[in-house]
Image (cartoon, rainbow, N blue to C red; front, side, top):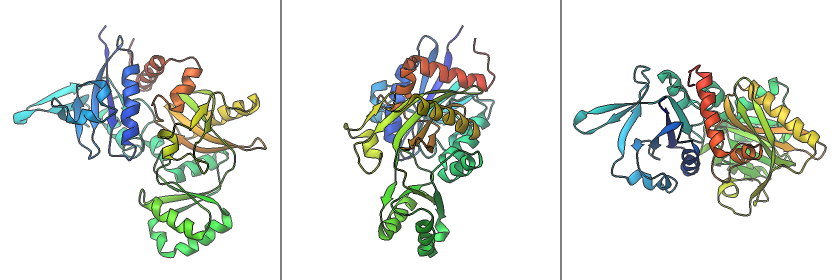
Length: 360
């Protein structure tokens, strides 16, 4: 039987490009080579798509972009092509067919449903959530709305869109009345804590809102939750499995920002988290409930706060969580007994199962 051809897409125009290439390196090295042929598709920060055949170790450093054998390519939305069109010299092209796509893309254009919609048009199975669930999980306002409707506790919040900046003081009045200081201000559609600020007074609140609008046209302002930051990995389609809970110990006293996540060695994770078995089970149950409510499939990492009184508050859902060596998702699944190779194998099989493809 021939091997399954997997296209791993990495990079992208997102401000999380540099995290994506590290995640992709881990994923590519972990995919079992006895079962799968891997085709590497890199997207530069300017949005140029390239078929890459060089050393996997050059992906994380972004040296891959300078490889002389890179071939420009596009993903065809026509199901007839079942893959990519590699553009050669003199107008020649090659149809690079694939069986499944593993998008190792974080943030905008990779985790927000845009590229998932393209995969669905092309009728190619792909790892992770579909277009609608990706978009709804990426948009923090929509996530709040769906979870609130399903009885899943989240932080109190107020949304603001660009047109409301003309009466910002009125919106600040609403936020102060409903939320109180300090508040967290977040772009609605960014990940890895990009553009997130903590505001302790009105001046800081206005500045934080303007900073968040530099990253998105919609901003979410939330009450501050004082509790243990913890995360749960979920994998599956119709019968999702939730891992044990991991605890985030951030090097940043204010919050777990981008630098604390990826650049500060003092940040660490504890698996399992320092909490009771009852709290772990409550978080696992809530993670699966949220996963189903949002329509997730394949995988997601669900982030929570555990309050001192035992209350569980859901923070956010990441539909394509980091797969770097220090990322919580692969660590949690490894704790549950799944090696990196078994994780990637299972995720690819879940993608094929969802598309009802016979791969045996």
